[in-house]
Length: 275
Ligand code: DGL
Image (cartoon, rainbow, N blue to C red):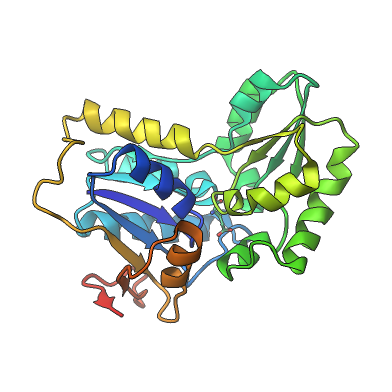
């Protein structure tokens, strides 16, 4: 069982690639929609949420965890690896390395949340791989909220993206790194704004390959679903919109959504209820 965690619906962009690479491996998708967005929150708070989310996924049976959120990875990837040495973790960091390797103009843009930009993970990757490249960064305020609402192509969403992207167009960038897992869902709108000459880099396919490799390395079968285990979709928000997101973002109808609420002790309650 793979556990996949994000603050909200963004991790579904990663789930989609994992499912197409590993259709028979069962997963639990956990969206902390009670606290979304994570991006503007302080890193220690995001770390607490992420630690509790990983504890929950392990209690529910996850044997490998994908932190399908750049912000949560920035805050907590190192901590959860230390706390659960028996579990392989896959985290996300904006794909600065391939962008820096492939740029012709020597100028790239990275779109990510404030939390991701403040984290050591991003700074380390940028210092290591983008020394000879000019990197423009933007936090695109409000975009995650629009995607959570399902507003992928409305005028307010376009206005947010115009504010972030139009100033970059005069900088001769040729790569835009989608450094938040929510953003691939507005790729068509980004493409309309930046045109055809700029490459959009989404790390999700590479993450799926990494998951496949780790499962094979740890001897977990990727070819059969051992006991007909069902995939699960869990939100921490009782008024969640995960069901409609699965429908309009991935085309899944009739997925059963479970709700697992936060408890006063800072943990997520086990035995989520179906709604
Ligand atoms: N999807 C998350 C990421 O990749 C962040 C969204 C949020 O701000 O909660 O960073």
